[in-house]
Image 1: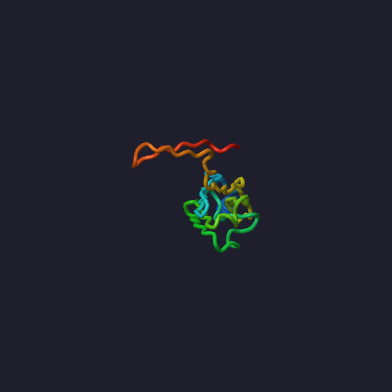
Image 2: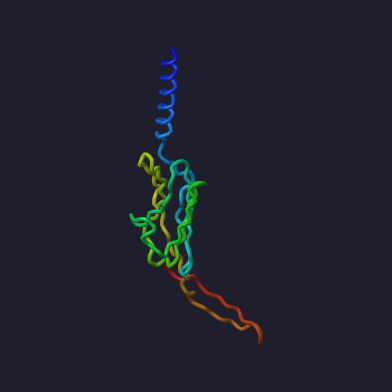
Length: 147
């Protein structure tokens, strides 16, 4: 009888250990989104995951750590990651994605890729006309450029 209870306790402990080791793959709760920024500014992506024990950014199929100019702020405890991208001209049309990792079971979940788009200065005005109103004021009129 004692042997049976001891075996039941051992079995329960083993089952609990197995159940703790078997975890679901991380889930992307708040994925990063495409962003449009002005030239010479910094783009910032954020991502939140549930599950897993590591979180990283993938840039053009490489770890963000291969790009020292990128600033990745990752907080695994809260499941949040932030990536700041300065010097944007180099990173336009390059995919960024957030990766949640379960290192115990060696599984990961990736967000959909997101991109940085640059917004440059607007086109110059078309048919600009200055009309004097008085000795201190003028009226400017113009047309939107074609195209």
